[in-house]
Length: 86
Image 1: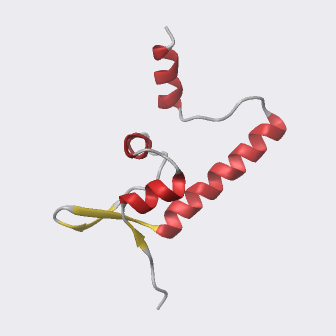
Image 2: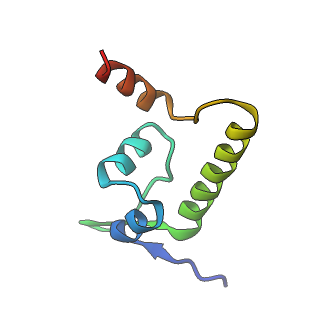
């Protein structure tokens, strides 16, 4: 049996460099792995899911800089940035 590592929110924040609110916004936009329920008041994330997400960001960043100017942001984030600049 392969063991799985569960990261709590502080671990996810450390690994991604993102804020708590950004993590939950990306989950809402279906652009970040969903947390798993550990108990009545506790959640965590599978480390492999978060690491896969980080690697996909690296890949999309590398392909964006090679093929397209700018970076790729989730649509909801782009919409928020646009509305804040007006």
